Image 1 (tube, helix red, strand yellow):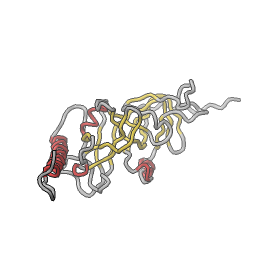
Image 2 (image 1 turned 120 degrees about the horizontal axis):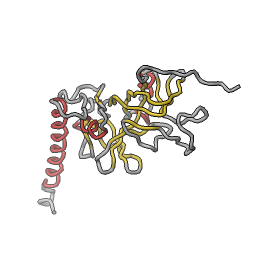
Image 3 (image 1 turned 45 degrees about the horizontal axis):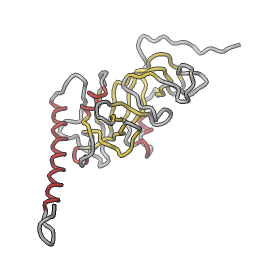
Image 4 (image 1 turned 90 degrees about the vertical axis):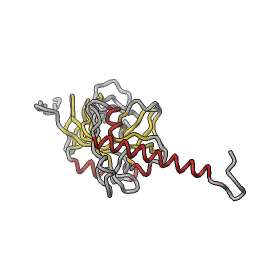
Length: 232
């Protein structure tokens, strides 16, 4: 006798929660996410279809495989994963579980998903994030990003939260949470439909931080040494 899983036909997609690292394409024109466990080598977009990470030809999610997009029911369970040292710079995602899915006690494994909201934690210095900056590692063709305040950018490749949302597209919302102080009310969300006052303030903060960094470098290069003026 072959056992069959009970079927669900929800009126609207279930909601799941997960964590993932934000990524930016090498040319800076696309943004997405990469997982923290299975499938971490395969960046995905806001709306994406799962594929079997083992290269098998079955359609995810297969009952006898681990393939598919994983998410949990409880937001606090996903937040707890951010405590791991290797996951401190990941974002907390709220997703719509789409297509066929298998429901487990603690979550889902689905064929498709849409990332609705991405929440960035504080910068490493403890200040609320205003941007996502190069984390110093990545995947082929993709730079992994990490939350950063305007003061800690220090010339790194970075995009504001609003810019990341625009590049990712499909109505993604990105917001900042936690930290000791929000940067001039500019740590709120960005959308793909245009910039409001908070987003413009965040953009201005990033530009000012970059300008301060360049002025510091110019001052250092032009500072006279012990033997006389700096040599070119």
